[in-house]
Amino acid sequence: MRRTEWLQETRLMRFEEAYANWQEKTLTQEQAAQILGICERTFRRYIDHYEDEGLDGLIDKRLNEVSHRQAPVDEVLRLEMLYKERYDSWNVKHFHERYREHHGGERSYTWVKQRLQARGLVKKTKSKGKHRQRRERMPLVGMMIHQDASMHEWVEGHHWDLIVTMDDANSEIYSAFFVEEEGTWSSFRGIQETLEKKGLFSSFYSDRGSHYWHTPEAGGKVDKHNPTQFGRAMAQLGIQMIPAYSPEARGRSERMFRTLQDRLVKELALAGIDTMEAANDFLNKDYLPVFNTRFMVEPASSGDAFVPLLGITLDDILCVKAERTVNNDNCVSYRGKVLQIPKMQDRPHYVKARVHVHEYADGSFSIFHGPRKLAKYDSDGNQKRGGNDLNRAAA
Image 1 (cartoon, one colour):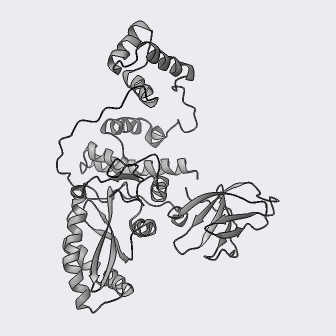
Image 2 (image 1 turned 60 degrees about the vertical axis):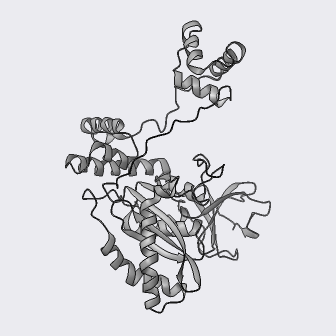
């Protein structure tokens, strides 16, 4: 199944769940639209299509079509030359009026503004300040997942990071564990444990840590067009990522950590625990079930927004991927290791081919050519038996 087909199948499953909850009046149209990552107006259109044609009415027929709305290059160039030669320094609204009335222009104000801004001919204005208000919890579990880390002296003499992945709707902690330092692998682990336990969720909320987001300017906006390894994995899964821009925005996570820092430290000391392995064992077997029962809240609506994984291979999504060119000896260089591609029956060699190296949490590797896995390797770069197959590298 191609990734676009898989994402569409997931979207259809989410729609059926959201539609059923809306019909039962457990969700408003606005809340149902949030599950799907669309606006309320689009959700109403989906309802019309669904009630007229069933799920076939929701299939995106544009996936295999070329857009006919893209403006010709010569039209864009004429617009830019017109502005530079005759209307330089005019504001966009004034220029757009002249463009429509005197030059036969038919494009919208927004289109004209975006073209001029993209070429640097007019500056983007700063957005006006917004009135901020408390954000209510999501009504259904699975609509939004939080992940955060807290560095603290959890055991006397030891400062570790506690990685917590929890639900916005009811504050249930799905995954929690100690590591020396948070990063991409710890984030992947928390997400994988959540996905395997509950299924696919709709959105992911986090701080702007460098393993979650690239932020060109310190304290500024994240670059959503340049994803990290974590961001790439979330996009593959069809999960929307949402950045938090202040500690207050992560209030639920911050309050959860304050409670854990007060209670969990005492419980670990009482149990005589002084190693990370023992602390993780105690946390998941003894502490979390009791903690969740004590601090979980009832979500606003019954049911959930989780959908099944549909048999996808998480290991080949929640990993570090890198593109490489195969050398003349059918080897690939990666992190100081030389990975030899074995001889294949259906192809004489892979010299100069572009392949992807997948690095896994246990230090092992795989090489993929398109969807085909060519070989598996251990952490030392030695090929494992049975490594080449026709398995797809996930949706």
